[in-house]
Image (cartoon, rainbow, N blue to C red; front, top):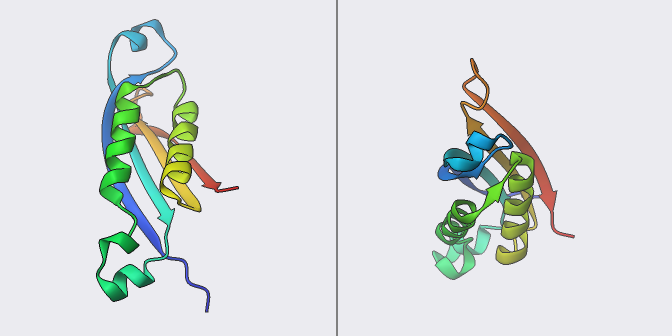
Length: 120
């Protein structure tokens, strides 16, 4: 039986410089990250051992630090960089990442990109 376990981080909100317009380069805006990460949780579940689990707090803190300190024009670029960090630094083999920029388009609640990436 194939098992695909996932660890989720939902609604991680971070303020950053994001956007292509001059006024956007002068303010901080909120972006929201939703991550779905493949991770085998069997041993952590059996042993109740944090060493076997994906440290979602460490992932969250790393992404917060990165995003707060970044300055991208496009949410596409920010999403790619965030995905690369999670895969390369935390050993996640696959992830789906939704990066949202609430209120970016007048009349809409949200705009977002949704990407899936795998370790190579």
